[in-house]
Length: 82
Image: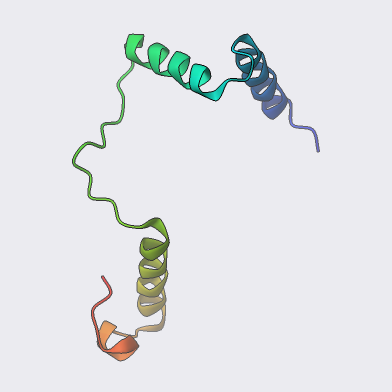
């Protein structure tokens, strides 16, 4: 299936990358410069306590399973996961 929105995004992304000869460092530097000049609010994740994504996904899955099945943490494996 050919999605016109995806095709347009890919076209603009390729045109932008071509300007920098597909040099990822130059592309990122340009995007960061545009971001700095932008007056749009940005998400600030400074101070965010981030876990290992894989570990967090497992914990979230187990918590969802416990909620769905009515199993508490101690029944699960004898320790607190979340």
